[in-house]
Image 1 (tube, helix red, strand yellow):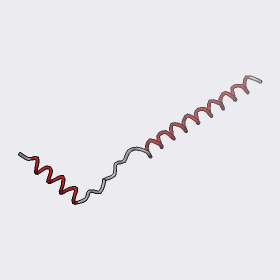
Image 2 (cartoon, helix red, strand yellow; image 1 turned 180 degrees about the vertical axis):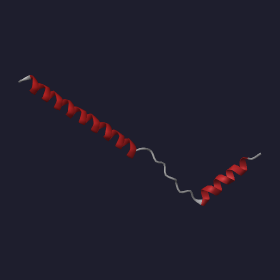
Image 3 (cartoon, helix red, strand yellow; image 1 turned 90 degrees about the vertical axis):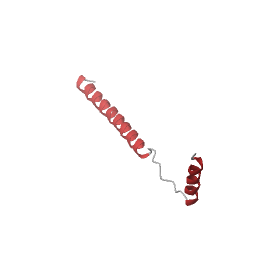
Image 4 (cartoon, one colour; image 1 turned 180 degrees about the horizontal axis):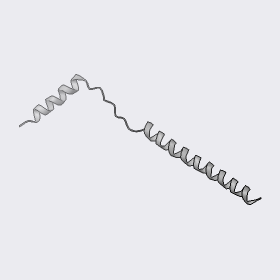
Length: 61
């Protein structure tokens, strides 16, 4: 193969590798963003609130 053809092949291989790496980085960022821990507010019943308040009142000296 001629030098020009070898350079062209190397250029395309480099471009393909760059695109693969860029896609992997994008996929990692997307995955981290969509799987980050998002704590939801748990529904608290009135009985639990009354029990916790009563416990706090009982602890007072």
